[in-house]
Length: 215
Image 1 (cartoon, helix red, strand yellow):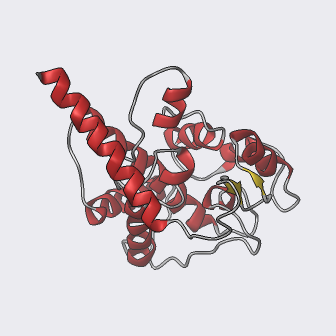
Image 2: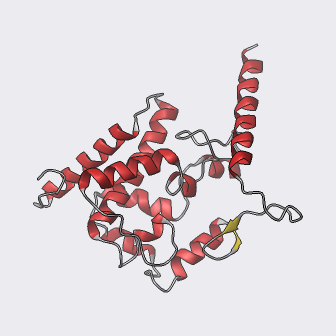
Image 3: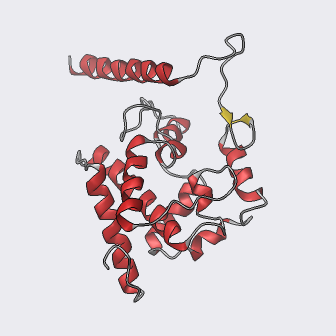
């Protein structure tokens, strides 16, 4: 009985995900088969095409070693290194390893969980990041070319403070995701934003820099 109920829950979650996705998709060119296109290259999306763009784009450093120069705690640098190489244990990556899982974002329950979704388009993440930027008085200084927010971490056009806040936000969003799965504990975007700002302020104090959020 328990197994049947669990299977029913998984099927119900899958149907909910399909329904939500269909409601948000633009209906154009119905005579063509559906394809997932990577807007940065106008080609079919894959981890390989994203990584190639990340390392070969002329406006960003061609080496991911730039991650280690970010002015954030070491554990955040390590996390960003894994994120940019799509090495996180997201559901889509676990499925590639043979695990039978229903792929739905733990944070928003409205899309499949991928590293790209969690750190670029997840409503929970976007709400949290906007709060972080607003509370710290930091403008969102994106690069001048179309890019994902991950690429902003490696761009010379991005301010140091924005890179710090973005990197720490990524780290804490992943912690929030894992906390919901393994500890069944969830925070609101405002609580997550405060945790991110506390971490950022503490890292600034360790360097002897007064952060705007504390002044």
